[in-house]
Amino acid sequence: MLVLTRKKGEAIFIGKDIRITVFETDNDKVKIGIEAPKSVSVLRAELMEETISVNLESAQRHTGVLEKLAQMEGGIEKEDK
Amino acid sequence: MGVLVNMNKTKIDMRDIICFEDGLPGLWGLKRFVIMEPEKELPFKYLQSVDDESIALVVSDPYLYMKDYAFEVSEETLSELGAGGPQDIVVLVVIVVPSDISRMTANFAAPILINVNNRKAKQIILEGSKYRMRQPIYETFKELVGRISREAV
Image 1 (cartoon, each protein chain N blue to C red):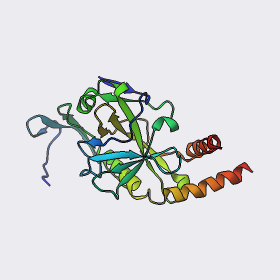
Image 2 (image 1 turned 60 degrees about the horizontal axis):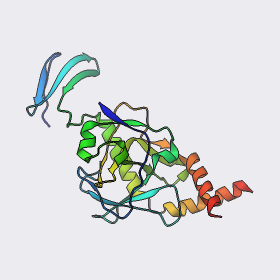
Image 3 (image 1 turned 90 degrees about the vertical axis):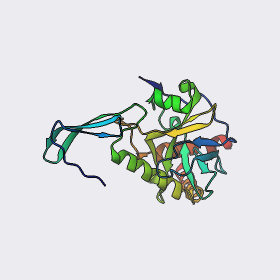
Image 4 (image 1 turned 180 degrees about the vertical axis):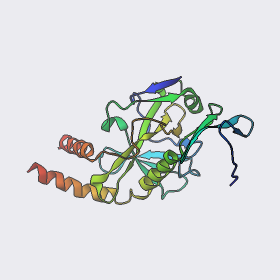
């Protein structure tokens, strides 16, 4: 991983059309500005990571879904009585 | 400017292959999927990988669970999908069914969009939306299953 040190107001380019500027620093927080073409998606990493986790859990755990639901429907019948 | 997607106005044909050109987050290498119905009539479907038969995500029509679900889609996303507008798109959400099914959740913050005309699909992540990646849906699910089994009788 490339690690750079930048001061407030300084920027870096990624490729020719993505520019990242440091706006503010405050102890453990950094405010950054991102200029990028609209076709480039910019996301907080935790959103992408959580989407990945949810997709993998959905894909892995479906085995046995029907069995679990069979148990559940039994539960519903009991509630109806 | 984006386009508001707030309803599944069209139905999707189950037989055709759906193509995620960018892959799905976490399953980047898998691009071709089909939609399969579970054996019993249930309020979800499977998004089954064509390239790896061991991979199938549980998905559902979000509007079964949240009638007022709505989000904006960028022009870039629409043109990537080759879609003219919301009328071309079917929305699905990814469902997680854990071993304790009462804790099942749906990911309303990262909907899957499918252009029904050309079968191009993409999972988008809604930045800064009010929707949750793990929205509990068990109570609604139970009602839906109850309704289906009553109708079947």
